[in-house]
Amino acid sequence: MKRKTLRTIVALLLTAFVSVQPVTCPIQAATQKDTIKAKTTQSTPNPFDISDGSSDVTWPSGPKEKNLTSDSAILMDADSGLILYNKNMTKKHYPASITKILTTLLVAENCKLDETVTFTKSEVTNLEYGASNIETQVGEKLNIEQCLYGIMLASANEVCNGVADYVAGSIPAFADLMNKRANSLGCVNTHFSNPNGLHSDDHYTCAYDMALIGRAAIQNPVFKKVAGTKSTYLNATNKHKARTLTNHHNMLYPYSTSNFLYDDCIGGKTGYTSVAQSTLVTFAQRDGMTLVCVVMKGTSSKTNLKHNIYTDTISLLEYGFNNYQVHELSNPSTTSSEETPFFTQFDSILDYENAPLQTSGNGKIILPNSAKSSSAVQKVVFSKNNKEENGKHKIGDVTYTYGNKTVGDTTIYFEPDSIDNQLLTSDDVTYTKKTNIAGKTATRNHLIRTIFIIICAILVIGFLGFYIFVVWGGRKKIDTPYQRRRRR
Image (tube, rainbow, N blue to C red):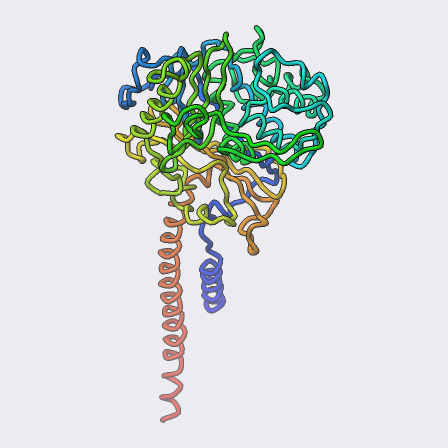
């Protein structure tokens, strides 16, 4: 009976010893079968919450408003949407030809570059006197790529009409698309009625809205290439000889003067009507930081060479580049929250192009030079009721704030097809709150498991020793009298 009891105890201890497993780490956790559509989203900052909201942080001061010739201006970080500077940024203005940024973006999003547009009489002749054009002829055929260069470089108004009809069927229908896209980006004071920006009382916007549109546009690779082209050559068409187009933006190309050439400029769009005055959108990039600058109702460089929309823009860009810096999210020092280890415990996973965990956006935060990267506060919102699309699953959204302002955000996706030995199945990808601190939990559980194993080993050895002592000790007591009788 004693032997059976001891054997049962030993068996139970050995079973416990073998079956103990550590708590699952987050990339192994699986609690829900639903997944979410893989779609990169763009957060929209609140245009009316432009104070830092905290006395514990200090934001750099930009140029004095009176030193800018433009009535409205804004400087925005293209990655995070952080507003670095504003002057009357939500004030209503007529945009003139910077309207064509949205036109180009919509065409790039809805057409292939080799599609062909055939121009009609109403499209090429329904223009006001002096409107910019590339002399497109009735019946002329241009592919979409040629059209985009004509719009962004030469500001061709008739080409805008042609692509609007091609994409939407009519100019009013295309204007509806423009307004829907603007609304989706979070625009607050915008209404477009045509694709080119020729004056209309119900065609207006504001600097803030144009920065949002510009931010979305510069993240589109087709738009970025076209907007950053200094000059291009269009081959002869069925109605026109070959022509060379040059960019009108004087910070990128010396179209009318070389005084404002700016090495960090990667593109932009000019605008002018007698009512709107001069408008300008500029994209610039330095040290990993991409900025969008918009100035509206400013002074033309033809009117004043020393104080104009270009000097305003350069002043704002220099302020941004000199007072802010970019921090990579993959750097462990950029996280201050111990509850969200995505960029601390798993930064090596996120660094690889084909890793199972991927993030949307550029994975950056922007902070004043005086701020440490660890000052950014990280918040993760985990996905619920997710759906799958193109083999990608949304795990959650990560937002970084500093002084109550969003300084960076990204979305975390899991891509099971990117690895052969999946740590997560396609039906098992949702993170729960219990895995928020999995980085630390895994380490702690490893220690607990080790201690438990040692205790189990000691107990097993102890019980084996006790078993041997009892069994062999009992035999000795039984056998001794018998051996004595035999010796007699």
